[in-house]
Each structure stands twice: as structure tokens, then as C-alpha cells.
Image (cartoon, rainbow over all chains, first blue to last red):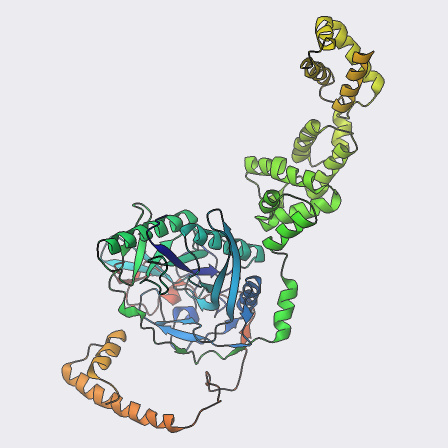
Amino acid sequence: MDSRYEVVIGLEVHVQLTTKTKIFCGCSKDFGQEPNSQTCPVCLGLPGALPVLNKQVVEYAIKTGLATNHKIAPRSIFARKNYFYPDLPKGYQISQFELPICEHGWLNIETEEMGKKKVGITRIHMEEDAGKLIHSEGNSSAVDLNRACTPLLEIVSEPDMRSADEAIAYLKKLHQIVMYLGVCDGNMEEGSFRCDANVSIRPWGQEEFGTRAELKNLNSFRFIKQAIEYEVERQADLIDDGGKVVQETRLFDPDSGVTRSMRGKEEAHDYRYFPDPDLVPLVVSDDWVERVRGELPELPEAKVKRYTDELGLSEYDAGVISTERSVAEYFDALVKLHNNPKICANWVMGEVSRALNDNGIAIADCPVTPELLAGILDRIADNTISGKIAKTVFEEIWNSGKSADQVIEEKGLKQVTDTGAIETMLDEIIAANQSQFEELKGGKDKLMGFFVGQVMKASKGKANPGMVNQLMQKKLKG
Amino acid sequence: MKISREEVEHVARLARLALQPEELEAMTGQMDAILGYVDKLNELDTEGIEPTAHAVPMENAFRADEVKPSIGIERAQQNAPATDGSCFKVPKVIE
């Protein structure tokens, strides 16, 4: 990142909620339906139609607010944000302006470059989405209002981030939290999690902020990083050449990697907000807030702390396991059944994720359930099978759904722990490789591995390696 | 004057109203009178009084998150001046 100036970034994130219906009417909000098939007088903005607030949206807003350390407003109101655009049928968007539902939140982030840091969140408010404009070739545009009136949370950060990496760290954290809460499906390509970035620069040591540009059309983490980095360079070059940054909205073009001015939208910023007379004030009691707080799942940060402090996992393993809630829940279920967290973590990050990736399956649908996997791990722990054979057992269970004990029994995979049987094999191998045995006796320690390997081969992996080693030592002394 | 001719022009532009010069003149006078009248309210002492967001003393009107049938594309398009398949058709919007 450019070092000539200090970079200042604030982010506005729009989170589309996973409710079944729209925020102010009962239309379904399924993605990808035929244009305008999910509309009614309310979301079409027909005269006389009255909006009624979806209670689930309020629940989700409180949930998200609490998970990001906000104060939940006991009383909040809806406002009209007035502007004209063909995707906005009423000529105003119902949003919140004064008195949003959540204020004064924060999130902890961490980057390699700048370490740990607390990022302030100014507010979260509820609002309706606009429809979709489809730009066609001719001299007209087409409007699909299926998305109109879809519930959104707008989450506005403080201008606390100082690099593109910090911005990405904040966004990933927020993305992870809304997915953990289940309030958003997190799909950035479909626009379920959208971000606008306010970017400005200032000379090092200067208190007041520089003039900012608002970057739009950022629908992947990679584009966000690219757009911010491009914009910082552009502003720095501009100032160095004696120019001035203009406050404007700029559109990121992923094909060329540059941001371009969207001139002519400036005046539209005069939104003339006023309280929406169609919607009564929203009052959220302490009881309501506390009820929602009690229903919050364990969040990623708390999980990482518990995994490291109580289960003794490394910071890295704890981070990987807790990235997705479904993975963490699989792990939690597994640890309850098999009390060796490190082994459990290795299997979840290893065999389980590999098999899921290879087969394109979500962990929630993993054919080897935590119960079945615990069955395998128990048999490793009591030396019935080796770690290597366990992988074969895992595959068998994956395909058959049988229990570990069943598979081990049917396939005869039980580890050979019978000293006599192993010794017989060992004697045969020593007899067949007499010269190597003498060399080993003579101090060529490397040959130890050769003999153990031969026994493992002869037993098809079922001999207990520790036991083979022990017996081998005995032979050498004898 | 409570409002300038420029402010009236600005508000008219935001509302997409194309006013003729004489209309602008008349409108400026009328809006000025309205604002003057409303200004009387400022004489009231409202110290310590919560701003009113809604005239009806009521709160928390909710609906459950249950899908209700939509009205169908045909009815949705019934009043549209122009359509394009199942979409509404509007003059070209240049981004």
C-alpha cells in the first residue's frame, strides 16, 4: 500500500436478511424468480397501500446488533429517504435516519501488517432494498421489482480502518458473524452481502480527514481490496500533482481494475428525510433484548478462546475450526464423544474436509457423522486400529454408513497386537534378510525402518508399529 | 424572505418539477407565506418535549414472517404505460 499518505477507510455494508418474506409485505423474497412475480401493491408502491413491519426483521436486527456489541435503541423510527430512480417505485426508500435500531458497536480485527485493533461501528439500521434495473441494448431499460422491499440491514462503520487489509479483515469478520447468526446467507455474488467503501487520504500527522470518494459495485473481497488500493494511488497521485480530490461516487470496474466517477448523482444526495407517517414507532423492551441475547449462538471469537484456553488447540487450529459455524458445530459434537480435542481437530481439518471437498458436500450433510467418526477415533485410541488403517475405515464408513466396529470386524482390519504373531512374522523377515540384520546389529540404525516397514507390509498395515519396534529391539539385544 | 428563489428552484428540481419563470415567482411567494405561518410554531417553548414522529399514539405494529400470495405479473403490470416481457419498461437509464 502507498506510504506517502495515511489512508482512512469507512465501510457501509448492506446485509440482505434471510427472512421468508419482504420487510413491509408478505411477498416471498426467493432469489431468481420470474421478474415481478413476487410483487404486491405495497412493494409496487401503489397508492393507498400500507407497509407493515415484519417482526423477524427486528429480531434479526437486534441479534446482529448484540453480536457486534451495539446498544439497542429502546425506541426507533422509520424515515423516508426521497429520491427518484426507476428501481424505486414509491419515489422514496423506507429506511431509518434519526433513531436507528442499533448504535455504538464495535468489532475486533487483526491483520498481519498492523496487528489487533478495535473498529467502531456507528450504527445499524433497517431498510428496504430497491428493485433491479436490467440494462438492455435498445433505448429502454427494464425494471424487475421482485427485490424491491427486501429487508436489509445497513451497517455503517466508523472511519477507523487504515489499509485495504484492515478493511478486508473487518468485512470478513462481519461476514462471518452474520453467517453464524444465520441472518444472512452471505452470498456476495447474488448481492446478499454488499459493501460501499468511503476512502480518503491525508498527510501523516494531519488530524482532519481528507475529501472522500465513495466506491460502489464491490461484490467480492478481492474487488474491494483492488478498488481501495487503486483509489488510494489515484488520490495520492492527484494530490502530488497539485490537484484536489472531489467528493463523489465512483464505480469500480472489475475488468480494468479502476474506479470511475459517476458524475451527475451529486444533487441526489439531498434526500430530505422525514419520519414515515405510515409506520408507527418501534419500541424494543429490555426483556426482548435479553431474550434475543440469550438465544445468540457462541460466536467465532468466543469459540477460538474456548478452543485454545480449554481444549488446548493452537490459535491456528482454533481459527480454522471456527471459521464456519457448521464446521465448529461438527467439531463440538465430536469432542463431546471423543475427548481428545487435538486428534478431533486434526481429523476435522484433515480427512473430513478433504472428503467433503472432493465430493462437494457441506459438512452438515457429511455421511460420516460425529458419532461415526468418534467410533473410529475410539478404536485408534484403544489400539484396535492404527491411524493409517483408520483412513481406510473412514472411507468405508463414508460409502456404507456402517459403524467403525462393523467395518473393522467385516474387513478384518483389527490391528495385530498378538506378540507371538508379530514375532513369527519378524523372524521370517530376519531370516530372509540376514545380511541387513547383521548390518543393523553393527550399528546401521537406518535399517530399523526397513524391518518395521517389512512387518507392516507383511501384516497389511495391521501390525501395531510400536509393538514391532519393541520386539525388534529385543531381537537386536538377543 | 424565508426562502430564496434559488432554494425554490432547487426543491423543484429535486421533485422533478419544471416551473416556468412566473410559476417560480408565484411559488416562491406562496412558500414564503407558508414558512412564515409555520414559523409561528417556533415561538412555542418545546424545551424537554420529545419530538413527535407519529401523530397516532401507537407503537409496534408487526406482521409475522409468513408468505402471502403475490398479485401476479399481469395484475402488477396492469397500470404500467410500457412493459418488456414480465418487466416494466422505462426510458434508458445510463449508469
